[in-house]
Length: 286
Image (cartoon, rainbow, N blue to C red; front, side):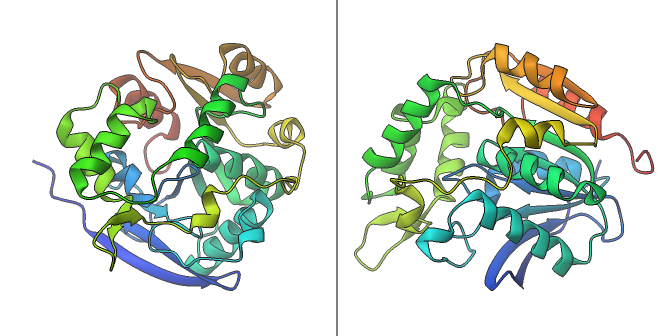
């Protein structure tokens, strides 16, 4: 029977902000950095992080403005800043090379970072995201950002929101899994309500978005490391056509599709988990 993996909360000051990172596994092993989606936080990777930590040193990040990381200026919630944060966090942790696994927005950060810092990235996984977002998914996400409640009376109400309103990845999860997912995304406020554990500015759709450091397709083509593209078969964000074009554009790319899953797979699905473990390989297989 495998011994439980020790979990540590680390706080590092990087790029002028205090960042929270959940570390698992033994220091000195091949390093994996897990980067979550737009309105998520580090605990969304709890299911897969413990498995990865049996062989790797795993770091799950709270992107600035989310989870336990400090809030920044509203104008700094953009890809350019997130990429600079990632490089500063990597340096603060003393990591030479890393495997990056990014879900949705985390995949956008991964694309840009790997293109700008190819010498730092051993392998990369882009989870249900590409250089183009399908219009239907883009519309759904914008509606989610602007229509989400600001507070909930209890944790059951938070879980109900995720189950019924705007979380395609929750469709096949058990009630216990949904409740566990929901509880990490809120905090109990002085008002007595449960509120989002993130800066409200994260949910504001900017009138003029800050352009990314590189044009997205250009960034993808500059990724020199092996890349695994993961697509949920029911995804409204990453279309099958864009996924196929990504593999063609990458220097060393491959793709898998996770059946019966929308945006985005959690890597606890057997198909996704097995493909991920095969892709990143055993320790020593750089």
